[in-house]
Length: 171
Image (cartoon, rainbow, N blue to C red; front, side, top):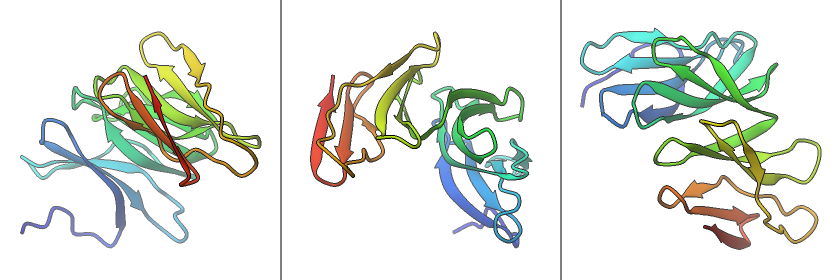
């Protein structure tokens, strides 16, 4: 057992890079979470780099692109949505506004996510290369039926469960 962090901060949303070299995690600093950036630690050197500022917002729900050079995450607060950032902190770019619970396809080309705020949620698919956005025709079956985090089953199949009731497989 080797400790990789040793701070008074709270680390959360841990994600290992596909190449096994990095760990990305969210930090909660202050009370309550006044600053919540994302950090990346290089397991070879032990050097930690803050890749987002996290000031006044909460950055979380981290996943890696297949190239191990970019991270997908959610920003809660001002500018709410799904973002990507390079592990050197460059290119903090927003993909989808007013969305959450992203699932990056294994090939890194598509983001499945919950879409909508203040209305019945839907599952959307965002194409990273083209910016095209598609809302999936999944019938949630009535009031208070909300999709749960989508999960990719291979590069082209998506599994969605709503309110712990129905399971939908999307090809």
